[in-house]
Image (cartoon, rainbow, N blue to C red; front, side, top):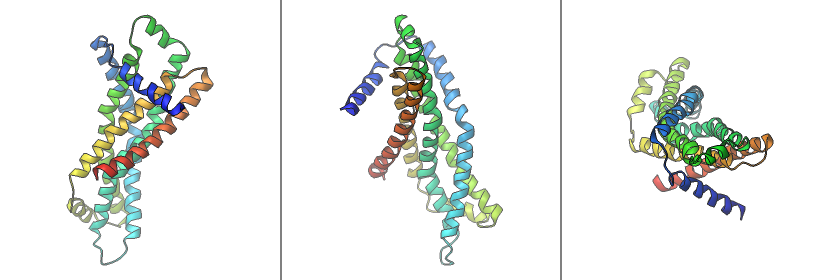
Length: 245
């Protein structure tokens, strides 16, 4: 029964973000702040993860395809499709669930424990709209951009390693990138990116906003938020793949 109660509270939290709008200038300032925090703040870790994912994909794919019958350009096709379809959106968002999710949960949890949220509500401010909505909106703006960047860097990382190690020359890799390319794969990856962006921000916001207790409970809420976000991301990945592919 607890899971149904939590789900109901989660839906009410999302509904509460739109029931009492505030000054839009205030929202805009907070939205820009969250875009910097969530987007630019995560740029480094996303870039590093994407490059190494692409590099490892090239090495492992070339290790498996050693038959002289199979053209080497197939390696580039496999790296391209796996990076676009799975690695860039899913792995990137799982990493961001730990980075962004823990930050959001601990920030809101600290505000709840220190009674800052109560003070804002006494002032007549819709705290759900002021504290949670800009975070979700900023994630929906910046995380798909980070996923696109991860696609580019992942493919570049695979191309770079293929050239440096001599596994796959750049001209063969470039030719393989253009062979049998399906533009729908990019659209599918962006659908996943928007879905995961909502999960990454909304679930940690729920746990942080509703935390009760002290510093120990804030830590537990952050851990629960990250674990729940990762599990739901993997579940959503399976559901989206089943429906859209």
